[in-house]
Length: 481
Image 1 (tube, one colour):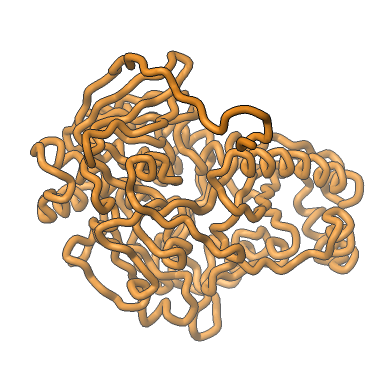
Image 2 (spheres, rainbow, N blue to C red):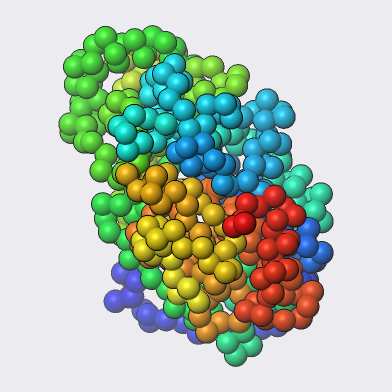
């Protein structure tokens, strides 16, 4: 029996054919999410002819089409900003259009009670508050962004840098010359075509290119971890958020009973939160966020997570997508009938793409592990520094985590770099460092390195770190002194 339970052969041989080469460039980036955009912009700013392939009709991935609009964890718990570069540049661009919520710098590392209360009440405590070993919450630098404006700004960043964007184009298979990746086949409405490149960057998030290139990888994720889930976000507008919040607070037992009735089971405390996170009662109970973006009056954001055995399995992805779409409508109708504040609400949009939170992690020249989270190791080839704001009491004794360039280079494969959450890392380490800002940092580093390798006609392993460091520093990336 074959995979779709129909009679017939389990495999079929595809007929050989000539494939048109659409472009021959210095750098090809596959995947136009936040990490892919950063990789493409960084490469193009380095003087490399660059093409960016994206399967959807927009850039931004989970930050736009996935409606996951939080860019958290940019500073240490004591208020030092460590993630800047294209992350901060992007936030600033969106903010200039009045389309971002940013925690004011004067509050970073502080315990301002009105702000703490606001984030707890709206559900955004998981993004803006962290536990300090002294027991109190601390505010950390982060932002919320308007996805539609981010689409525009990502387009503009690429255009200004000279990146050629190809939307509606799904990178499907690497073109190999022995152990070297020299391009990618992609599918679109125009049929199958190819792009050749001196360096390819896999920014698919799921390792779509590196695993087909024959790179080793690890895809195991324990089922109780945050990044073992698929998600499908939904925005509900027309909510009287004050009325809803008052009911939830003043009639807590009745509200909990309604949520139990709606779900068909008692609410379960979420076990996937990281040790350093604070979670508000609203988030823990029903997963609803009260939108605090400018001009987003009366909007509630719902982000349900469903465990998946394999987030890259098309049948499981389809099943989860269908179930969550139905769940959004069923739950919204229940809330509208039974919960004060939702009487005049409506579903304004459901995410255009299913949210994957984890997946394949390449076997690289260096593998980032939990030891690196707790060792304060500064690598000679550090390309990103991440604030450690997730691991409980160690956030003071081990405030920074350095990521080496080698974690982006697949073992045994030439001509390929890996950005986004597929970087070489253990399951535990990847849990902490696979969010939007981390993917953007890794993408920026990969793009800068790819441009250096392409322009010098050298392999990605031969990139001079001094030159790479200079390129990143010129793009306002914070690196070791």
